[in-house]
Image (tube, rainbow, N blue to C red; front, side):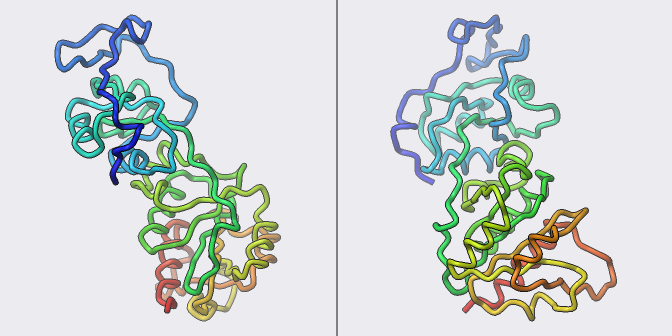
Length: 278
């Protein structure tokens, strides 16, 4: 990911107490800042962890960073990989921990950056072998992050989420996705049923995962452009969403266990779909 563009051509700046207009006590090493008090937080638009931050910085569809916090070692890695950034602040690890939500495993790096734009459904090309994932009220950020990671690994064309019942693509979710947030196109829609109708008009076929049907997923897949629809772990697919699917199918589980975690089910379904590609 080459970032030799206008966002990364400026000199590196280490924030000083005077620049921040806050009573920070400077560290004696590398111009770092010590966390005497908590700084102002953004709402929930922080990314943390090396892979999530590096993928965001390498994505030219992103806007310029608002803040980029890194320990001295991470700052050197960033400069080596991307060049110098005017948004970079070299700080202590404890400072980053106080900026982020409690318990965030940040690996010495955090980024505040505007969210990615949602992709339009019309942007997904219904070519043979293409696979989309649609998540029906899957709200756990760890699960959604893991699903995005699997989608990237198996070459999915994109992921469709609901506007109001899906976590933001930041924070814990982005950390779990290990950079896939910036690799997989995501569409946010108001109504999943209408989205399925739109996709059907464009040539997509929807296959909903449902453990109560007699059809196995292998039988339901035909190699055409397919939307795999997964429901929440507790409720599964909602009735109206299931009715908008062309076929309901289940993952065979010869071990007799009742169900899989939704992120595990997504990975299995994506693997099965990859086998039908030409």
